Length: 374
Image 1 (cartoon, rainbow, N blue to C red):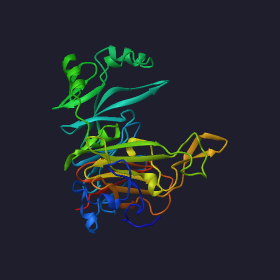
Image 2 (tube, one colour):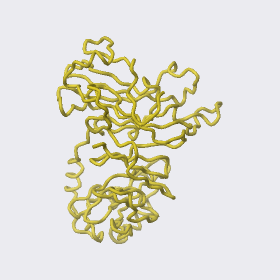
Image 3 (cartoon, helix red, strand yellow):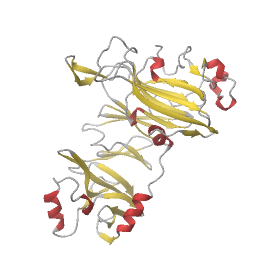
Image 4 (cartoon, rainbow, N blue to C red):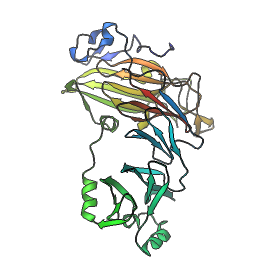
């Protein structure tokens, strides 16, 4: 495999033509809707290969199931706040319980506590945290003596969560809780009790982004040609892909993308395994923002057994991690950027994407912003 910040996809990669047969890249060059400057010999970059900034954390960058994300001009994780443009630290604080961000508004981060007890997991309680300083401003659980009753009964799964002040949305300076209580975001005090509003909020969920729709198996239309649809799937590789490995309990994964027309006829097919790479089987392995799909790829399987006699117990494999940029207009990898100069055992994730670029974490300690190329 060639190294460097920018390399194209494999020259002999096969693709499926519209008639169902096998075609090479040259057979698709005549499709006008899929043409791009890369086909004319111009050098393209989807992202700048050098990160705009890097943040190192002593305690970790995310907690429980909640991950780092963009919030306006800020990047917030558990628990720190950065200037999204420069990576400068605005504050770092410890929070004993809050570990799930629900929303940010009016200078306040609204959070909850994701808890696991026995075989159940749920969000419990409501916390207001200053966006400016990271200070805990207020907490809310319920009214009067009931908050002590709910605390005593929280070990019983599903019994009391609907009655507690668990935030489900933040709107116009108000926190809507599953209990039906509406709280003032500035001080956590009750403004009203409105069950109907809770139901409306749950019904009026925001539309999924293209990245989410793609991950959850929906076909996403291309912006410049709505007659074409992009789809993705992640599946275990067959045993014959890497015959030297025989760990059946932890199969390596392949990430596959297809572009099809309205009739389902394929225009191209791309598999990470075609370039000799492996992918993770989760949401953080890729992100889509037209015209590129960004993919975290490893040159070796990400996990290997600690003991070959117990293949279900695994550890991170030492592998070279790279960020691939696939141009969906032509089905080619137009940029291949190393995320580490030497092989690493860190787990890399695409935490978030917005108009600035991609937030990529490595292990649990560092975070980088890769800007889109101009």
